[in-house]
Length: 336
Ligand SMILES: NC(=O)c1ccc[n+]([C@@H]2O[C@H](COP(=O)([O-])OP(=O)(O)OC[C@H]3O[C@@H](n4cnc5c(N)ncnc54)[C@H](OP(=O)(O)O)[C@@H]3O)[C@@H](O)[C@H]2O)c1
Image (cartoon, rainbow, N blue to C red; front, side, top):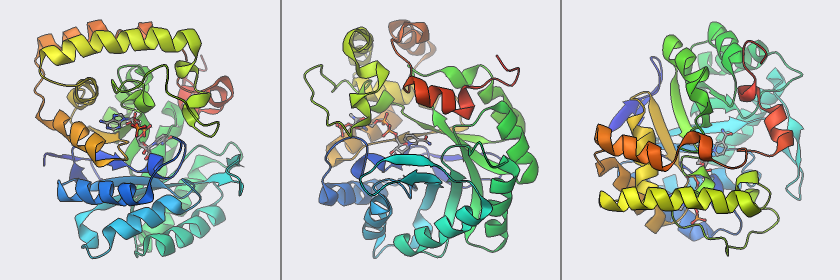
């Protein structure tokens, strides 16, 4: 398994991480046994980075990971956990809590659910507008000093917040959406993480399945499925985006690869500081995703991929308007 190091202070992990979210939440019905089998298969294949959130299925996702890790050495895997998103019992989203007391309380529950004495990377899922990032990161730093957390991470924050957080405690990685269809970080965020020695764990590398080659307009989504209200999956936007997928398919197949493999390999090619998280929740999808590690793309191949999927051609924003307005990562440091 190829490895990459998360920033100048973070852990060395497999070049692809496994994001476990869809095994519990947000992408419609999922099969627990297949989720555990997928995590186990990933570990057997040499994947050493698992990403979760305590709010994915209100603790369910952490319990799946615990089951998959049973009987294995804790040291063989780095677990990255997001916290702070508040959920109601019926799955509603109630806001964000980044207060220091919430940081510590959330971790206490996470450690119990995971059945471990430490988390490798701990991060607030979304900036809490009511709490200065220094206070949230300061609380995580206390947990680092106490041995419960190994590294501080960030999620979906912009340039100013990255600098402020890093000044409190070195940040291992920023988790943020990055794919052929979502290249927004290249403008301002990536130069700053590179300047500061912060790694990127990229999510949505397949644009939540849109860029996988397996999505069809006929696919039905439950109302709780993120994609049932994601702008990119609606009506004419979807038609346009699937045209891009077909253009990518032609390039990928010419290289003996699938659409998903080309999309993942493209993100891998963007720098050694970037670790794509793949959201496979079935073993067959995981196998396909891991195949991206063997795909060697020449400069001509990369140019053909970018010509097939020009960033400007994507239809629809990556989140709905309310979320886009809330995302710290969508705010530029010059206020534009
Ligand atoms: N920090 C944040 O704000 C944030 C936000 C979202 C996610 N994340 C993390 O990032 C991880 C990855 O994000 P994501 O799940 O949205 O990413 P993704 O990899 O772009 O999308 C995963 C979806 O792609 C589909 N897919 C089709 N072929 C696939 C293949 N070969 N390999 C993998 N997936 C394939 C899966 O569909 P089917 O199973 O339906 O076939 C799954 O629903 C999450 O699990 C989570 O840990 C973080």
